[in-house]
Length: 266
Image (cartoon, rainbow, N blue to C red; front, side):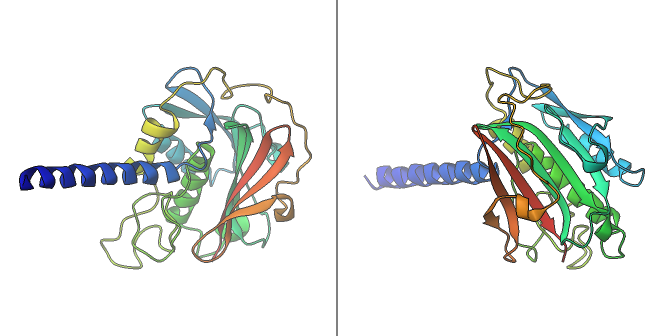
């Protein structure tokens, strides 16, 4: 009888642990948003609107995210222009001296229902030209994380001062792991949990339509939004551990929304 009870407790513990793991994985996706596609693997185009300084970091990011079994990214000529205008069916990646507005990088994602229809990534050279942020580690972290958001991934952790998780989807003050101790992990690339989230959760199903590679938005919303202006990002829906607004949502009408992820300097 005692053995049966022990087995039952062990089974219950395993079930709870499994359930907790599922919940943890689910929270690593931001709301289940994803690119619609009818087959896997699919290929997402990253439009290169970058200066030569940033090109190696986009190449590294594209290579890293393409390790996923369900998706590949490929770098193509940018169509964003000087304003980094979003292009339906792909992601435009841009750099510019955006000014002392507080942010290192932003990822902006347009969604129709639960489907991503287009996105942009912007990195702010106002800060990346300074000694603190003009490093390979900071450039890798921000580029990798912002592109990761456009794939449907959220942050694994939003505490800046705890031990690095070894993923670019982890907030940190020490992306190359040199400040805390010599054994600190680097937060410059995706890790196994990121790939598991993409392959086993976000893109584990098929859709009946394709938004990746599409040429027109499903509902064609033409809402005018100044995506560089924080006042136009809509309502704050998430804060990071320092109290900074890390995710905004703007309702564009007709079932469409704009999401803005932010990495703040300092």
